Length: 327
Image (cartoon, rainbow, N blue to C red; front, side, top):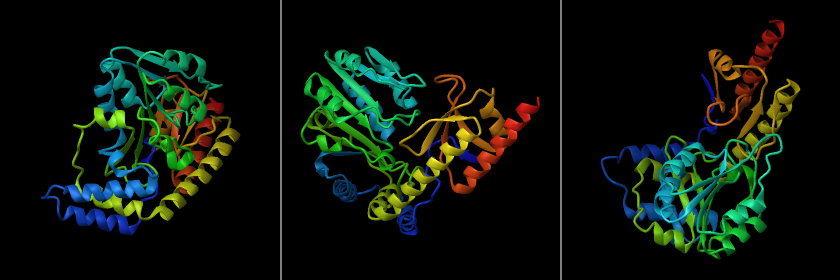
């Protein structure tokens, strides 16, 4: 099965990272010491420019996003985009006192920012993934972010899981605004999805509210993460390769008559009028994310794979479309 449904990095980590993970496996009978966790925080500090005392570690960014909802939605409404990262959206539905969803609909994918700004005037927890999953679009700019943050009743969380592919970040505002937090992960660009390492860059309001959230990550995850952060050239080269393949895939998919939208991530949102396209691909050994149940029928999210995997996807789609035309 060619897995193009989970937004994973198709390139494995370098040998130096794998060796550190193997070293951690030989010590899994022991908990990871605080000194090692602090070393990881200092590596993240060097990478992001955010002081290590303003960093929280997490087994994946989704875990700390859930913790934020549990901790800060008691006396605030939660504001999110729809669609958005599904686990966070579902958690907010279940646990928030009040939830407001701003619907982003194709083909324009417009965020009505004035309405968002007005809705956030009362005490709110605003969670926005930027770039957005599954549209691949960026909806935030500095003017909008600063406007939201200037309202001290607003807590703003920006999920930057795909930062290394978009190149745009608001983490530089964390030191200035105590009501801002940025979540990131090493699952995507760093090729560590199987080790689950995420982190939070947090202003003082978030650090105070999350003071009891302290996790001990497994040694293999911590050792590998430290090594990966020392090898940024490898990470960014793979991100460049994925962006190049993304551009090619968008071009070739549109040639086939499958509408592929621009993206700032390692995946592409597509629209197809052919019914059951996801099921037909799966029968032929290719998994993509069918968004029918969670969003709108006819839309699919396709992760950018290796060039040879993308070639198989394109050839398989040609066969499926040819079969449809003959029926």
